[in-house]
Image (cartoon, rainbow, N blue to C red):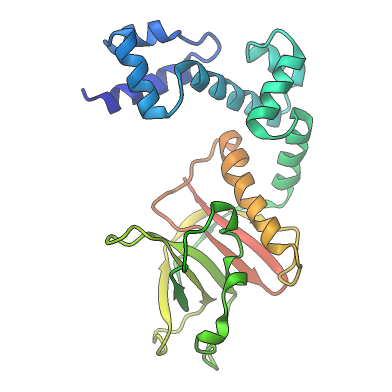
Length: 263
């Protein structure tokens, strides 16, 4: 068994024993390594120490309990904190907000989230390679940074079911992400100067943004919502991100949605 498989077993073991988590020594014995060698392998694989990893997992479980309605006091005790203040400090450090606000945010987002199954569809538009490396917090509504006068105008007389913005999987040559912006259509012929993508059938968690397409804060809100989905919603929802499918922003009239494939 290679060390990656061993770390995966440790990850599963820790998850099953969070209430009374194992020590680094116990995990080393469980894995068949010396304590010294195990700690080095664990940090190399997860990027943090055993203690830090377990603390994060306990806080993630605490966040899940809070979202499910458990009292903050009981959550703190179950997470192994002797005082509410110690739990509050650790929670804020990990999630950037206090537990009460976290719960309100989860409930607020869930009110505008639906789960649907969407058939495969095609979209025609522009495939753009960003001129420079961009930060993840700038991914949302990236089309606002593009000068579309450099690209051909949308073809006339094509059915437009809504505009689609998506980061396309990296190329095999250089590993760079490409950005697609276009519109859903049933047109079978790709006009000159345009690019076509096929979005596969998938089950989606669909989140509605709280701004319109014309709102000045659109980009800021979408980036906040993207971060919320992956940093907060997935850890407490029980859903898994389907990495084999495509997530995208969808613009319909003045409504803006984020589609995230789940499994």
